[in-house]
Image 1: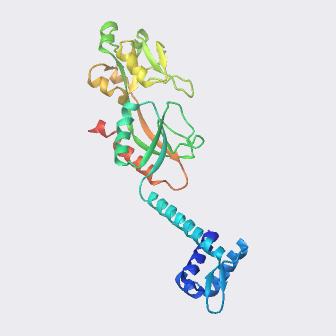
Image 2 (image 1 turned 90 degrees about the horizontal axis):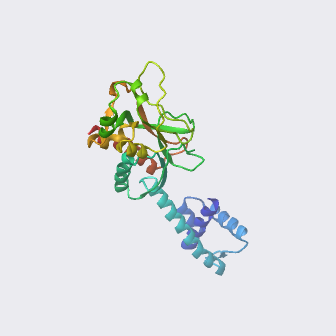
Image 3 (image 1 turned 135 degrees about the horizontal axis):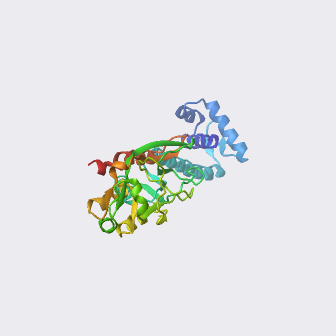
Length: 295
């Protein structure tokens, strides 16, 4: 910054032809201007001005340096202007990690891109827990409770779960009337990629249940598909089966015995200033992610 300041003083002296005039424009004394020019000449090991009691003119080296100095200052002013605009309006790249639930997130992200065309999204879909800071993400969207103290958290909304099966499966194998009846059914499960644990079904029952592991996967879309094909009963979040329940491809069972509510959260590194683009994304997702369900 001292070098840029010296360049500014030099350009002002060259354009006004006077230490006094340059000092008046810059709001400093002529003596301070003269000292700044002397320090710059000493640093460059070259004389920039011919000095006399009546005139101040550029040397050949000074003329060459003036052209370069003007370009440098113009580039700096342009960069400063761009950063100023960026701090006021959302623009630039956002690297986001999301769970494998495109049916919920893609329509909202599409709307966001339409509203903020200057924000570039880099989306990484994965059900595993990523390290937001170490892997260089601006934010992640996940379900459940988060305990990383390095991250800020904001809730996008709540969701419930349903135990579901296809009408064809229920017609063939019968509809379970209590959680204990699931022991006689094919059950399709979800396994967490990071921990390797199978996600428990949020069922209200008096004693622990050992549900059949007819199929285990780490992808919600696969669970939905196999359930629609009549291959078993599964437990899925409402947003993953909303369309299938509406069009009759799946129907819910054991509703009185399902007791679970979880949340969708967006998390981002704590500390420092939040960029306008990240703030815009967080606000937009909080406002729109679950709006369709409430409409």
